[in-house]
Figure 1 (cartoon, rainbow, N blue to C red):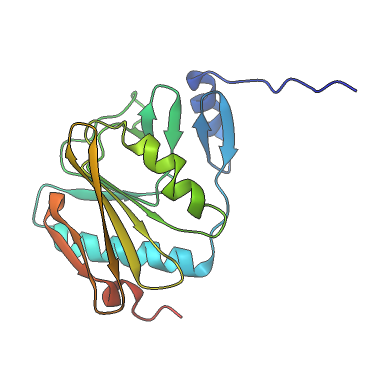
Figure 2 (cartoon, one colour):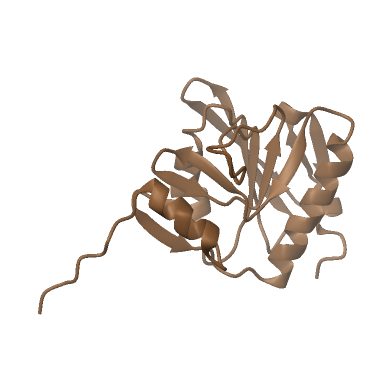
Length: 187
């Protein structure tokens, strides 16, 4: 029995379908991948991160956005990070103003189903974004954050912040957040 060919979409077809869809998806080289549901804990950590960032950034030039806001990584890759930090005027792919092209910092909260992808393939993809200074990965099950920082052309370093007394440092936006603050009140 033969295999069926899976139709591939163009970026334009993806955007048209995703904009009309009830549930959002990511796009990778013609393939469409639904965004999985998140746990209550994941959602609470994303909200806490957003609150911490908003307080620290409110007097400066940077602002935040959240999923399902899309980020165009390359012409053939679109993703929906958990938190997006912009420090310049937002640049969009078109007049629909729903797909950012110039994030300064991207943050993902790990889920059991996406942890390998967030640390691996997605991390590699994010390094293609010229404006990206830092990619932050926050664990869901313990106070742990990894900051992958651009240190030069095609050069990146990773710093791990671990434990309830650790402080998440995001130098490109001048932000320090105690991990205990992010995880406060989260079971």
